[in-house]
Image 1 (tube, helix red, strand yellow):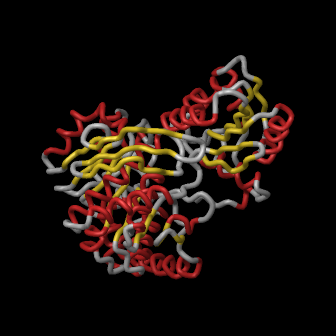
Image 2: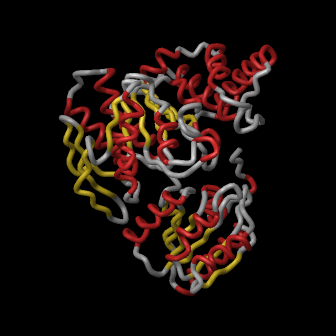
Length: 438
């Protein structure tokens, strides 16, 4: 199953529906128990927040996310625990056999993401989950998560990404992501989608889908941040929760936490009306506070202070950088950066480099663009910076630690997921080539 290409040929919905049928997935139950998270940035954090609230409410909760950071098991969680190795192997064997049968009969070519989505559906069904959160891969219109049939979904944010598939305007990209929602449902839109509200309202009108926007129908206020926690007020219809706390840092997490809270409340109102308000508020508070989600402004070491961020779109990187400055200060940083070969290095490095006077450019083992090319881009974006080249992640870890120690600096690692995770693994004594990202 994991040897398949990342995506199959053409639109996957029909062959994936056949696969779910072959696995005897109860799709009506899947629709009732699930919410779907789409968007350009913030999907993983939002999905984790929503699942955390559901667990705190006492629901047996499945969580499907991508990509994984360290082990593929992370993608398939029940009550916060990744699927066990033995169960993963057993489920993968079933799916591989079903795919082989469908392919033999119809010639369909599946992709690994489709297979993993099916594995999540099967795992959650076998685990008798009460609630499940599915994170989309790309878009929503033709993404496997559309087959969930969820009537409660969200678009966390919208940015220029996968434009060859989703369209060359924000309106087209947001429309594609919106199509993950079943007719008659509700979509929660993040703050940066508000500028598209007239378009999205009309786009959803004839499917009977209700749009709700953060900072319009969903209120956020009282935002406060420290180096260890964040607080905000939340309001939706009759719900008014003050001073909610989360340990995930960054101003963008207010948006994500509010979306996740709204998703769960809307699902609960639809599927379990009349639940006790006090129990709901307790679950929201506990769920948001207890969530841990690695990779987003994550502190991986205190001496020297070292943070990694897995954001890999220009808007996501700008948001994380702004939060880094607000929480930890603007001065005294060493930036370690690199970009994947399939990303726009000019936009990503251009968003980072002007804020740092010391920059180390490197190349991730997985899909990393040439370090010399990244350095050229960094010098163009910030001619005054001292730009260093580290040909490997291992060299980048060593050099950044030496510079931080000799100049009493902090380290910020940003530019892409592979870069950040490889750096964290090497800094803790591991080997970057041993990681398997698919």
